[in-house]
Image (tube, rainbow over all chains, first blue to last red; front, side, top):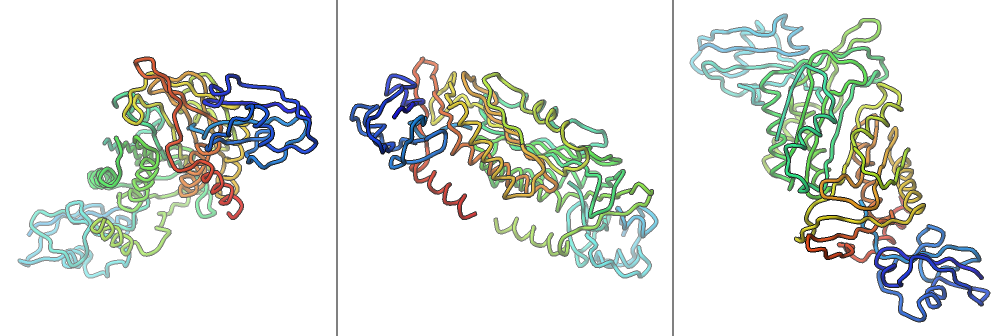
Length: 78
Length: 78
Length: 159
Length: 159
C-alpha cells in the first residue's frame, strides 16, 4: 500500500522533511502504523493533530491506498 | 420661571413646532407641569421620552429656571 | 475615542483607515467594525428615501457616553463612531462603529455593545418615504421603550 | 461565500468594498467585519517578523466549511474571508472576516463564529522571529487542542 505522509510547522522541523512516500506491507493499516513506520518507532507527540486527505481524524483511523496522511502541531492561525 | 421646550420627529409634527419658550408662574415645577402648559392640557402620549438638558428623565422630574425640556418618541437610529 | 455626527455621506472604511493612522502601529491585534446601511425595504414596504432627524448635542453626548461605558467594561484600545443624519438613500452607510483591541473577544463585545446601546439611547428618528411619496416615521419595533430605557439605566448602575 | 488564502499583502477594506459591489444594492442592513493584524509583541516578547505556514488545500477547505456552517446556523446574506500566509510584519493584516446580513445580531454572531472556528480548525502555524533573530513556533495557548477539536466536532454534530 502506497501512502503520502506530510509534515507541517514544528513537525516538519522534527522530521527533517515536509513530505515522504511510504510503502506499507500490511493489508489493513491505521494512522498509528503509518506514523510508526515513518518515524522509525518514535512516539507520536501528545498534541499532534492528524488529517487524512485533509480531514481531521485520529491515530486509530484506517488508511487506504493513495491516502495523504498529515501530522502537525495545534494550529495557530487567524 | 423660563423654560425652553423642544419637540422632535412625530412629536414635532403633533405639536406643530420644534421649539417654544414657556413662562411658568409656579415656584416648583415638574416636567408634567411643563407638558400641561405647553400642550394646553393634552395627555402625554404613552411612549414619549423626556430629556432635561439632554439627559433622559421622567414626567415627575423637577424643572429649573433656564432648563431645556425635550419631548420625543422612542428613538430609531443606527 | 472619536464620535462624529454628520449630514454628509461618508465612506466608512476610509474613516476606519484614517482613524487607525492615529493609533500606535503594531499594538492592536484586531479591529471589529459594524457598518449599518439603509435597506430599500422595511417591514415589507419599499423605501426610496429616508430622513434621519436628530437632537444635536444630545446625540453626540449619549454616543460618547456609550463609548466611554464600553471602554470601562472591556479592555479596548480605542473606538470610533460616525453617524449620519438628514436625507439618506438605499445602500448609504448610516452608521459606523469600529473598535480596536489587543484581543478579539473584547472587540466583538464592545462593538456590539456600542451599536446596541447607541440604537437605544442616541436620539435619532427615521422617517421613510415610499416610492409613492408616502411618508411615515419608523416606530420603535420592540417592547415598551420606557421599560427599555429603565433596563438600560439599571444595567448601567449595577454593572 | 468567498475564501481567499494568499501570500500577498492585502487591504482588508478594499476587499470588503470590492466584494460588496457584487452584492445586490439595498438588501443588506449591516456588515460586521473583523480584521486581525500582526502585533509587535506576543506573550511579553518583541516580535519583528512572522512566518505563517499553512497546508494548501486543507486550509481553504476548512475555512469554506466554517463559512458554510455559519450560513446554516444564521440568516446571513454572504461572507468573505481573506487570510495570508508566508512572511508578515507588524501591523500587517493577517485575516479579514466580513459578514453581510439583514440584521446585525446575525452578522455579529456569524462573524465571531467564523473567526473563532477558523482559528481552531484552519491549518496555519505562526513562527515568530525576535529582533535578536531568534525563531520560535507559536504554541497553542489554550487548553489541550485535541479536546478542543473534539468539542468542536461534538458542537457541530449536536447543533
